[in-house]
Image (cartoon, rainbow, N blue to C red; front, side):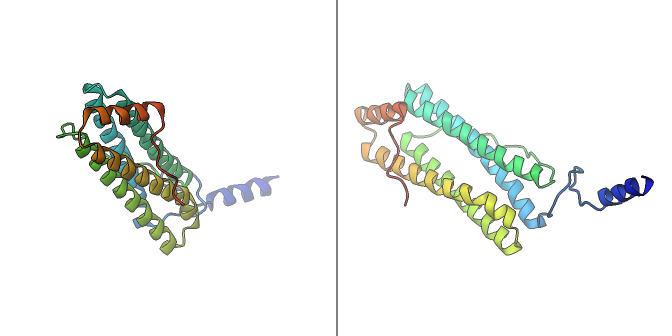
Amino acid sequence: MMLQSRDAAVAASTVPTGPAGRAMAQPIEAALLEGLQQHLTLERQASAAYWAMAIWFGERELRGFCHFLKAESADEQTHAGLFADYLVARGQTVQLEALAAPRQHWRDAEEIIAAIFQMEADVTSSSQQLHAMAERAGDVRTSVFLDPIVQGQIEAEHGAAHLLGRVRFAQGNPAAMLVIDGELSAGKHAPEPVG
């Protein structure tokens, strides 16, 4: 009996653990870990930016845009949560960095939607770079985790490009903007699916 408990104690002491003491099967390469932490911050910053944009539209009585952007803010927070959960599952400590105050003043709706497209393109680029880093590091776990995230980002970028095209086509015409606002309210704003 004593031999079994000693063997169990030795086995337990040889299990690698992360910074918080959680068991981990494979460590994450330092540069990849830093990139994952930075991406988590990028997702949180995108959430704050979407929220500020939603407020801008709410102040102008464009409830469809406001509701749509609040949902996008929640989605970005969910994405940040996925990264946090993944880091915990890999035995890492999640580092929550301070966020910069989001921009709150824009010239018009087109400027906001253009900023959304650029933000989504930046998040797509970050997720693709992380995927490439994971592949170079031979970290299959992270590659598999990132596969649906990269695909989702490509779709988000496509949706932002579609909305930007529609807003540009409207050229600030109030009636056209109200049509787009109504489509956003009804959830009938999506472009044709990618691939």
